[in-house]
Amino acid sequence: MACPICNKPGVPAYRPFCSKRCADVDLARWLRGDYVIPGLPQDDLSSDQAPESEKNTGGGLDSRIKRP
Ligand SMILES: [Zn+2]
Image 1 (cartoon, rainbow, N blue to C red):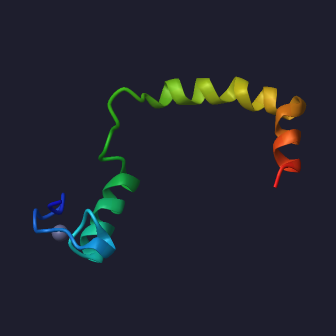
Image 2 (cartoon, rainbow, N blue to C red):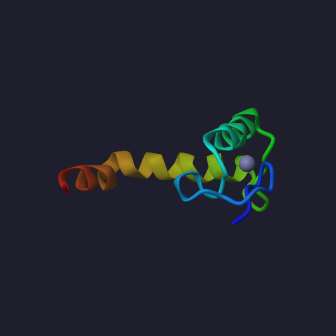
């Protein structure tokens, strides 16, 4: 797979990137919010998670913690 940053052939250790530098560049883009995932609006995610976490505090979370 070609490096998405510079289009050089990727290296398995850093795939799909060709080097740690390119991986860092990609990470920095993510952190800056340059990438937007289509079909996953942040508003949708947060409104989805809020009610679920409320449910989990009731008992669902408890059973999860007990399981190894
Ligand atoms: Zn690269």
